[in-house]
Image (cartoon, rainbow over all chains, first blue to last red; front, side):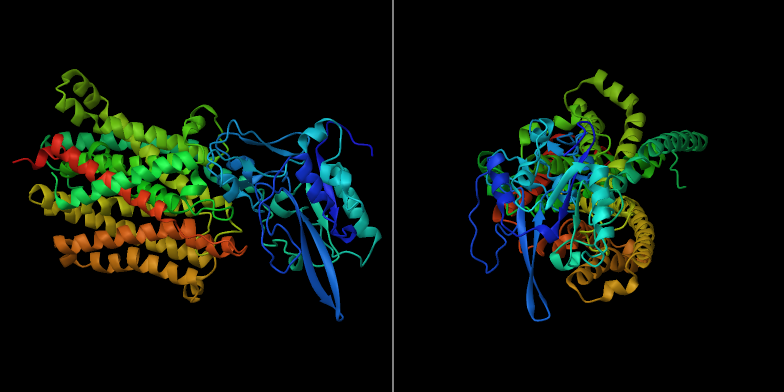
Length: 268
Length: 369
């Protein structure tokens, strides 16, 4: 696959190709040297039920009924690596950052553990090491070190059905649009991640409606950092207004008091 | 000094201190019931959001006396600033232990991130706590008979107070702005792009009520005669702010999910109504009667209602407003006993601290006979 080293990378997850083997889950655990957390039988195949600090990616199993026949869908979960990430804008110490190559990476040495990234992320991806005295925030790294070395991310490398199409971001979007165009009726007419949260580096195609597969369709299409920036960007003018108005008020009310005599109460 | 209440408070403080030691050794996860879907809990809701809102009286009264030159309120400026100082101490201590790695609390001061509201909040906590300490320092310098330092602080007091007013305006609103990034998580009853300004507006109500509440208690405790003109003035201020806040809330509700959403009967709708009735509607009705504004007991009742109502608002924004979304995954949150003990201990520190300060410093110079 021809990919330029400099451009931002992305991934198209074509859910129609996934067979739910969970090879990606194992490869991820192995490459990132993650342990396991004990789970209990819950009558469903999704395991662990949610991502956690030891599990950066999992397959969510979804069973639908179509004409009295069961239809299975398998959804790969991991960090979406937003183009304008909420978590990066939220972090007060720059512990999270979006690299030019696409991955959102975490620098533990800066992190204070405020967990605002967890609240800010519309996909609830950052997880915390609650059981540890000095915890890290943990999430999918998009195998940033592998990408830097010119390799594909671990989960994509092992996928036996080429569910994931990896390449430059524009190339990935073009591929998604091409598949939609050339296969009428095969997919629902939506590329999840094209607009969501202002656009994500990982995007999805699906044959089943996304909402039935557990995708959050309420996620706003705005760039999340803009939500807080509308407030922060006003701060300089607030500083100016408060200082000037305050100083003027002080000067005026002081003179009024002086006019009335110093000990006179100002009843204004 | 060692009244039964003080003994109880000190016992709670000791218990809270032990829990905090446990938390430092075993981690935030061991001491709290927080989890991946509920990254923030009681300490953020009550101690941080509540503590900071309760401290708003400091900048309001200091601004009234030093910037508006409204000398009528001079007798309450020291206790108001001291209350604010303890409110911020409560919030700053809670946030220091709430973050996962407490010994890195200083990171924001050197790792600037102007795009982060959390960084803005952190910087304001540092700057404003310093400002409050400066505003309270005359009491210390008087005690230590440091005339030079005293004269210097009094000379720079007006700019310091103005700086404090600026920082508070920004800090109260930025605490609300923290939640601007949760549009898909928080119930539309609370989520709106106006949260920062709603926080500022309600903090002013809260601040006035806390100052009034503290004044009435102090008068009882230290045997001062309450000054009715001050209490009535605070009550009038609270009424005006409450009316503005009520109209603001209705506007946000109507332009968001619609007025009917408050009567949907859901958990969120009921919490919303409770918050608005206790903290805003009943206080407005009571305060609009002149008889209330002239009775210490009734003012005291309204103060308590406003304090509870605005605290409820902070808990609603930080917990109940997002509970449905956060618990949909199957995870739940109810604070651990250790979280409750620490919250109770930090509040006790503020009460006992204020009492000790009032005993050893001239907190009420104008009240002294």
